[in-house]
Amino acid sequence: MNLHEYQSKARFAEFGIPTPKGKTATTPQEAYEAAREIGGAVVVKSQVLVGGRGKAGGIKLAKNPEEAEEHANSILGMTIKGLTVRKVLIDPAANIKTEIYLGITNDRAAGQPVMMASSEGGIEIEQVAREKPEAIVRERIDPFLGLRDYQARNLANGINLPREHWRAFSKIAASLYKCYQESDAVLAEINPLVITAENQLLALDGKMSIDDNALYRHPDLAEMRDVEAEPKEVTQARAAGLSYVKLNGQIGCMVNGAGLAMTTMDMTKLYGGDEIGPANFLDIGGGAKADKVAAALRIILADPNVKSVLFNIFGGITRGDEVARGILQALDEVKPNVPMVIRLVGTNAEEGRRIIDSANVPNLYSAATLTEAAKRAVELAKGAF
Ligand code: GDP
Ligand code: MN
Image (cartoon, rainbow, N blue to C red):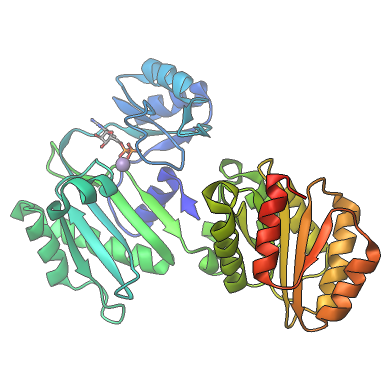
């Protein structure tokens, strides 16, 4: 789950990282009031979950409250990379001398967090990594030791930070690591971390991504989720307890088990290619009952790209007959108008297949192997019955 800039910076501030003391607004009038209370020049910043807002015109400086209101008026409602702006952050404007980058994420290959710093701040780090990789310095962190002081100094030295800022920089690096760890984050990023004309270090932008699987330990963070900013299928899937990721293909896949779901995606892609391949990843989990199957089917069919549906069920804890009844009940409720293939194996598979076959559902075909099922789903998506 990604946090908005204003949420990330509020979290950073709780851990002692210096941030501008701003306010959010959802109307131009509120933006005016916020700017008046803050006093002086402000910056009006769109709150959408994408980078590069500056370049897209979603960040504007305002000399006074009237200007802040005008900017808020143009920024609220604008679309940035497909997302509508519903909120702006009004921050006191900073006088920027230098922009640097400081971030932390998981280095999966190393199995450790890695902290990264760069003198090329303000630009997306992915771009720096492509164009000027030598400008990024890294320190891997042993989770049992935490970030050591010498590592923070290595980073400061690696980006040629003037000595006078090392102490403040080290403190921010330590706080960012603590914030990252205690929030169960997979990413915490300050870009830019600026040196102001007054020679202070200040986190002007913030980005945090929290591990979804750890959210149960952080009700305060879970509450920050911006449901309006995500596709409604994702919200529905979460509510139904399903793991769902939308993809761009035409075959809706309903599978029990994450590994089996990955294999199903591979197989549909193998036979259908990029265009026809999987329309989604969807794991209904073990022991799914009819209501869950129905919810999953509704989510799959809400995608207009879906031209066929593939059920790939391996009966283990989930019994084949139970799933078969669930699917029939769901089909009764949802009534899809696209062809479907079902591959059912494992515990009580034969009984499950018998149940499916005797129901005589039009446009529902059964397959004995995954290869056969995937090929069939591709043919059906192409319109060849
Ligand atoms: P992003 O483009 O979505 O990453 O948004 P940022 O918050 O990083 O802002 C983009 C750029 O706007 C920064 O790199 C700064 O150059 C500029 N900016 C942001 N806040 C201020 C500010 O308070 N004063 C000034 N002068 N520039 C700012
Ligand atoms: Mn930024």
